[in-house]
Length: 146
Ligand SMILES: [Zn+2]
Image (tube, rainbow, N blue to C red; front, side, top):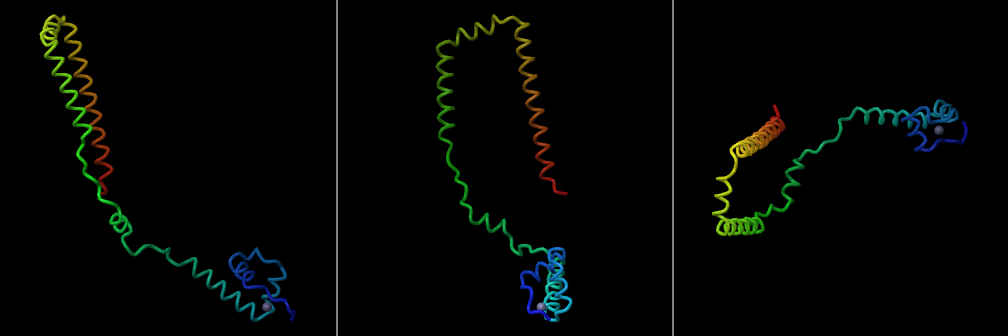
């Protein structure tokens, strides 16, 4: 019996992948009882580890993360209110200054042009409504987990 004994790393590699070891290691493990026992143990460990169930969290990870998140702030939309107010003031000023001219302009509008304008507005509105309904149905499908 030679004084050579493979290291634990070599035996573990041999247990996991028999092709890794050289002929010398394979021959030694057949002749040496101690190394043969170690190799058998490593093979058993490798086999058992391959059939073990995958580790999984046994707690609600999403719930714990959500608890750590700051509560969403419900800020008053000052910029939107300012924008709407300025727009309304602008439109009121326009209608006060040019109101009589706008009414005259609408009355003088040719009937065909007014019809085309109304039809275009209705077509755009119908298209937007159709898109909104499709998006709504798509989102409801995503929420339906059954
Ligand atoms: Zn040995």
